[in-house]
Amino acid sequence: MFYRECSNFKDSYASDMAIFPIPLDRWGFIVMLFMAFVIVPLFASEYFIANIIIPFYCFSLAAFGLNLLAGYAGQVSIGHAAFMAVGAYASFNLYGRLGVPLIPSILGGGLISAAVGTLFGLPSLRIKGFYLAIATLASQFLIEWVIVHVKWISGGVFGTIEAPKMFVFGFAIDTAVKKYYLALCIMALLMTFGKNLVRGQLGRNWMAIRDVDYAAEIIGVNLYRDKLTAFAVSTFYAGVAGSLICFCYLGAANIEGFGVMVSFALMGMIIVGGLGTVLGSFLGAGFFVMLPIAINQSLGSFMEVVPADILANIESIIFGGLIVFFLIVEPYGMARLWHTIKEKMRLWPFPY
Image 1 (tube, one colour):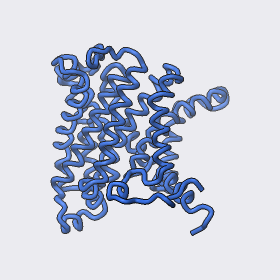
Image 2: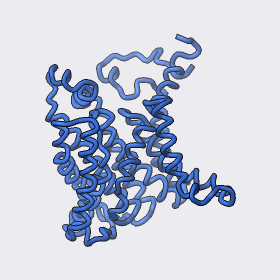
Image 3: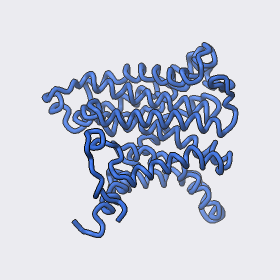
C-alpha cells in the first residue's frame, strides 16, 4: 500500500519525465547508493570486494553496452568481448607507455574501442540479423589475431601486459577498496549517462530501428547515422569495461580473458537479465558472476557422487539450460519479472 502514485502530483515537465516517478523508488535507489558507497566498503571482506563486486560492476557495464546495441537498437553482436580487449590494451598502452593519466587512459581506451567498433559496424548498414551476427563474430577473431601478433600492442604472442601502479590525482590506487571505488564511480557515471541517453531522442531512434527499420526511415530516422552511433556508444562502454577489468580486477591485460566465450556470456547476461533495460544488465551480470560461486559451493558435497566429467561442465550446462528456460518462459528476462511485480504492487489489493 506504500507503492502508490496517489498524492504524487506532477507540476512540471521535469517531474513528469523523472526516472523514478514514485517516491519509494527514489528512496530505494538512495538506499542502494548508500550501501554501494558506504556499507560494502566498510563491512565486506577484501576477497568479496576484489573477486565478486568489482567484476560484477565491470560486467554490468559491458552488458549494458551490449544492451544498448542489441536491446535498444536491435543490432546483434556476438563479438563484444573483442572490443573489451581493444579498450583494455589501448588504456594500458596509453597509461603505461605514453604517460596519459589513469582516468583519461580508461576513457581513451573506450574511445579507441568506439572507433574500432564503428568500423566493424559498417556491415550493419547493409545486413542484419543472422548475417550481422556472423560479421561481428568475425570481428572477434580478427581483433584477437591482431592483438596477439602485433607486439607493440600486446608485447608478444602470449598477449599479457602487467598493470603498472595506478595513481589518480597523485593518490595511489593500491588496495581492493580503492579499486572498488574507482570501478564504482566510473560505472555509476556511465550508467547514469546511458540511462538518460536511451530516454532521449537518440534512444527513441534506436528503438524505432529495432522495431521496424524501414518504417523508422520513413518517419525521418537516419538509419546510417543512428546504427553507427549505436555501435560507437556500445563499444565505448565495452572498452571502458575491459579497461576496468584489467586495471581493477585482473591486474593485467590478457587476451585469454576476452575470448569468444566471454562474448557468448555477455549475450547470455542480457537475455537472462532482460533486453532493452538498464536493470537487466545488472541482474544478468549478477547472475553470471555469482551463479558459479553458488554452484561450486553447493556441489562441494557431491564430488564423490557426481562423475568428474559432469562436474567439470556443470556450469555450462546450467547456464545454457537457464538461457533456454528464460527464452521460453520469460523472453524479456528477470527485469520483466521485477516490472510485473511492481505493477502488481501499484494495483494491490485491486485486481484491475
